[in-house]
Length: 318
Ligand SMILES: Nc1ncnc2c1ncn2[C@@H]1O[C@H](COP(=O)(O)OP(=O)(O)OP(=O)(O)O)[C@@H](O)[C@H]1O
Image (cartoon, rainbow, N blue to C red):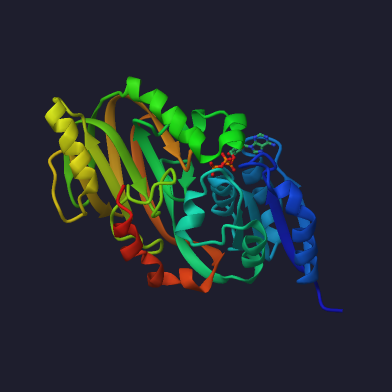
């Protein structure tokens, strides 16, 4: 008898609106029918998904993750430590699912579950953050970035994406400015900044226009967005205009560029957010793009450069 293919299915039962609860039997049935022996790990708390990958992942043919961006981050962080590469299927089940929309994964749970075993492998870049952390699609600091992890899970489950917007409006009153030196092979910037994000995605916080650059998830490059601290109401309105500009259009307050490596030194410690979860408080940060590290199973349309989403991204300016 042919040896069964081994799958590790990691499920965060609390992600999003807990939709997985209604579909789990159908999903297990489909995977068993497709010839997999499925080991299910239901996460109990933070870091559980990463630890399950480290403990069981190396012996599997496929890892499937059901959860939001935070759970996906944990699974990929575990996979980056495995000695042998394993493919990854993803069932987006969070409240925002930013990265899933970049990969054009099906929005419905059952089609996404089937794609997680039948999709075409697509090698995505991964971000290495300082010594010890990874991110899949965004590392950020400053205004609003803390909204994703400070929004209580119960509120996210109740209100979904609107919960972020509500918490974001609350944080408007407390925008902080940081004195920074930001260096990458292409340029060095110094001064006061209120916001920065280093991304590998077309959507952040559910907004597609924010990155506003041509994006490929496998080109070895991040898209960077940095915003200087406005000193006058006029500068504030220039920032709004600057955010709508394309990469090649220059602004003195808003910087958009691509790079594979970035170092940031700040005088006071800054809170970072990685894929919507708390990434630590740091004065020195090194961010490195590790090209094409994880094989994700995606719909064929998400294949390589077709996926760059140039048109869609530019049409969706916020
Ligand atoms: N059983 C659990 N109960 C509560 N929290 C959990 C449990 N298992 C894992 N977690 C934590 O929940 C965090 C958030 O989950 P996740 O990001 O998947 O969902 P979400 O916040 O609803 O989605 P999104 O980030 O896409 O908005 C994970 O990073 C993990 O630390």
